[in-house]
Amino acid sequence: MQRVLIVDDERLVADTLALVFQKSGFEAHAAYTVNTAMVDVRTFRPDLLLCDITMPGKDGLALVREITRELPSCRIIVLTGFYSNLKIVREEANRLSLPVSILTKPCQPTDLLREANSLLGAIA
Image (cartoon, rainbow, N blue to C red):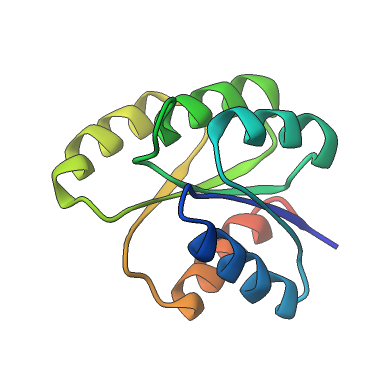
């Protein structure tokens, strides 16, 4: 069973997305801060990170940079509700050694699942 770590400071969003992935056959875990997520990465060892960008403290881009160094096999989807962030997020994603998918909020669960399956299928 593939593991997904969902990181969003909005607990309802993170928990809802975890349920969506669980009901679709994934083992899913929600984290609400970047610091908690990094602890979870070391213990949960996700195959996929689904991460919000704008969060208090360290942002999602900091998490993505850390995860690509620590767990290079992890696939990444970032979500942002701020269209003004898209240029910066794309530039940062292009600097990374791994492909990063970028989706905007609100995003349909079917779109997230399709993107997740596409990324994970590339390593299956």
